[in-house]
Image (cartoon, rainbow, N blue to C red; front, side, top):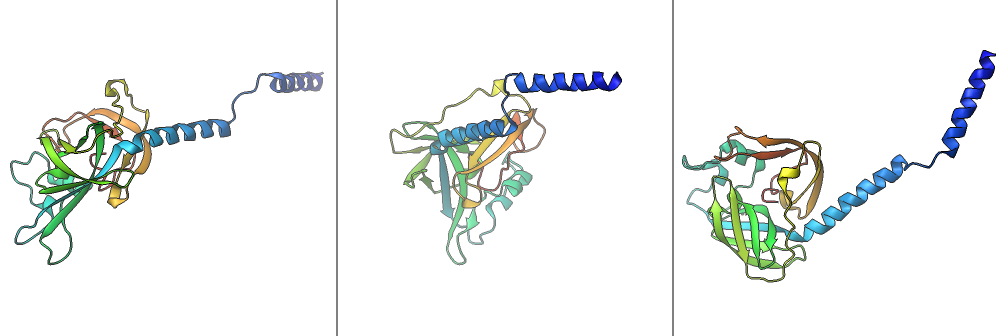
Length: 222
């Protein structure tokens, strides 16, 4: 009698599983997630630009981020990690170059980036996703928050849609797009690890969003 009852119960469960409405498979869910990432990357990438900053070398050129002044609110540790400081172009050539990233925030040529990407630069070259290279000029900086604005003389640019960071929560998925190591429009993926990070020692005003998406030298400003 016990065996019969168990067999009947198993048969009932099998019947239920074969007649219930189908649910999305793990494979289907993975495809949907992949499509979502592709859509976001496709939408934001045209708004991401590369920034090449150059300045005249000093008589004894060294790594730019190794020459922080006492008044500079950004610590050596920050620049050592991101590695976006100016570097000698090649031995004997009196010019230093630094690479970073920017985001078009206005269709009329306004680009947001990090202040340390453009600080001290004599010339800026902005490279769009389509390969066009435009001269840029710094129109505003705020070293205390490490932000800067750059302008190029071009209209009808693909401006990014700015979101609302107050709606973010730890665990939200995020995409980072930038130019690490000079490799343009590199996409990395992660999650929001924490909000409101401070006391890190990289700026006077700190309210950072922490993420585990890969951020490498050259990503700054992306």
